[in-house]
Length: 123
Image 1 (tube, rainbow, N blue to C red):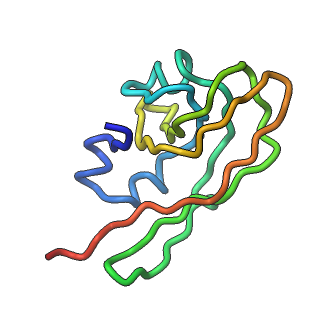
Image 2 (cartoon, helix red, strand yellow):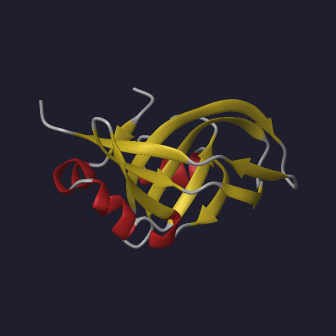
């Protein structure tokens, strides 16, 4: 599957992510649940706020850009393969995406580039 979104995101759009996301996780495998993202596969985490998201017009719809994050403390050794955005207040895994695979080591720091989610125009 590699990429996924919670049904609340699918039903309410990307503003739901912007309004409810509060944590960003670097994961060693594709999480399919909140617990997997925040514990089982979590290698590093960072706080998020609505200010970490910006809307831009795209040729085929609208893009919600997630800001780059730098100097994230790595808590566990492992191979980074996925990133997850969660709503820790409601224990929801909101969005999962793949990322460039890299080996992470506890005690080091991680930099994640910005990336985009796209809400496409109707066809």
